[in-house]
Structure formats: C-alpha cells, structure tokens
Length: 456
Image (cartoon, rainbow, N blue to C red; front, side):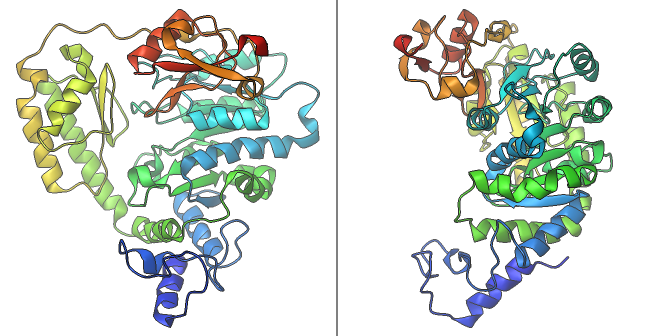
C-alpha cells in the first residue's frame, strides 16, 4: 500500500527548502524527529477538509478497516468522541424538537464523552449494566437495551457504549447493533482500545458488527505515535453522517495538526496491509497459551479481549498496586492497576525479552507463592445518583473545591475522574452519594469540584 504523506515529507526534506514557516525548530535536530515535523506547506494538504495526500491516505485507511469513510485524528480518540456526538446533533438538526436531546449510555464512559455532552448540551441517561469489576467495566446487554427502548416515550439520538473497556470486557456489538437498527437509532462505539480487532480471524471490530460510528486509538494497540486515532463511519451511514464529519472534527480540533502523527498513521496503513495480520495472529495465540498457563499455576486471570491480560489480584488477596510494584522489580510496567486488578496491554510489537520477563514474574509472583484470603471488591452500588442539573448547567455553574468526605449530597460540577482510567465516578449535575465519596478516596481523589450553594 502506498504512503502518500510519508513520501511527500521525505521529498520535502530532500528539497532542502529554507523553512520560513512553522515550526520554530526549522527542521534542525534537537530530539531527532524535527526534519519530519512540518506544517501545511504547498503540497502537504490540510487535515481538515483534505483534498490531496491526506485524503488519499484516509481512503487507504477506510479500505483497510472496511468503513465507508475514515478520518484521522492527531488528538486521540478524545477528539473523535466529541466529533461523533457533534455529528449526531448536526445530522438531526431541526428534527431535535423542543426538549434537550439525550444519549443512552453504559456508565463507564470516558471523560471526553461527558465533556462533549456539556459542550453540545446533551443529557445522558445511563442504562443498567452488569459488572463486578469496579468503575472501569459496565457491560450492556442487548435485551436490556431492547426493553428500555420499548418503554421509552422519547427515543435517544444514539446509544453509546465503550467496548473494549479498560478491563478488556467486550460488549455484544452485533446484538446491540441489531436492536438499534430495529429502532432506527445509531450505535456509537468508543473502540479506543480495539483498533486491532478488525485484523483478527474472527470479526470483532465495530465496523464489522454494524456500529454506525466508532473511534479507534491507533496508538493504543497499533504501531503509531501517541495521539494518532481514527473516526470511522459505517458504509450504511455515509449519507446520514459523512457530510458532517469534517465540520464536527473542526469544531473541537487544533488548527495545528502534528504531521509526525499523520505520517505515523500513513505508515501504519502500509504495515496493516502487509505482515500485520500474521504477526497479530501469532501473538494472540501465544497470549492465549500464556493466560492458560497463568490460570493453571493459580493466578486469577479474567476473561478479556485478546491483547489484554487482566489479573484479578484481589482474588489472591492483593491490591493491584502491590502487584504492579512487584512487576516493576522484574522490569515490567503495566498499563493500569487499581484495588482489584492489574491490566497488561500487549501488542504484536512486544519483544521476546518482554515475554521472558513476564513468564519469569509469573513463576515467582506472590499471587502463586504467598496467596492470601480474597479481598472484598469496592462497591459501585452507590454510583446510581439523582441528576439534579444537566451536564452543561453543572459544568458552567460557579463551583468550589471541597474535601471528598464533605462532598456527600452536594451537586457535582466538574466530573470526578481518576486518570487512568478517566471514567467519571460522579457525573456533572449528579448529587454525590456516600458510595461515590468512598470511591473518590479509594481512587486517591481528595478534592471534589461541587456547585456553590449560592449558585443554585
């Protein structure tokens, strides 16, 4: 597959032009990447509203992922999530009616979704979902969605799910898509952790399973630079949504996109079109065998997406943070750890040395040799709360910081988030419960932004 962006930049470097344009390093080496870090010079195209090499590269990406259209983001899936919700609002236009539009969602949404709802003035109605794994996981079942829609007086603009989630749980996207299709409602998927899913033997990517739109963070699981991402629109929704994609992306994005990230996405296309499927299949097979071995020797491994290893450390009597520290002694840095879990994110690019270290740790870990009584998981029942104000009203109200212990019964202003995983414990506009306050402290959040009493 051709790489038009990379080819242009290499040609530009060889031209030895005097760079009387941004950026200020002028292509001189400080870190080493500066010669490739250009701006929208003649021939380089522009990211938003592209007509040249970027448009060609994005078409390559769409062909690879089987989408109707794919758009690049140099600001991660954060930008794509905001843009997807904006596309919904623009596409519905004058048909919105008098009431505030709303989205149905599972509760484990990323903070960028909440930010988008504040900026676009959407309400969120959270759906009952299943999980005993903490705030990161919230699996929505198709039959639950069907029942909610059947008894709704007003239908949502869209249904929004995060899949895979931070703990590797995958929703039934095919089932949810069928339900949404019957009701004429688009399914929007935060697939930030699952860009690789399209390249497995089994169809698991949202574009293969009927989602209207999804975002992929290329940098999370593919060989791309941090911040490189895609917004995909399904072929069946091109007429409805594609005309508004650039407008929506422009609404939230910088006018100074990183050409380093664009080249990264461009090169990634060539890699995905070549040897990637084979390498991915080998790594997924090896990971499956490794998970089985861990399970056999007594390590509690949760069911998860193919490229994650999720350890239930609480089952063996340890906090996730304790085991993350133990792993560092073996030269291993995990993606995430909380009171219950340790999450390891693998990719086709992990080296043989990486796997050797992980095997060595597994053979000597306290999870096997010093197992203790299981720990009680933190309760998430107290997260169901009264929505006193809309997200937008709460975000733009006058606010103050108070100690987490004193936040009970106050109205949340800015969503309370621990990052990672960047999933709100309390949502803007909700009345904070005792259960939420306990979770704040468990996640190391000592101050909470609440609405001033006189602001009500």
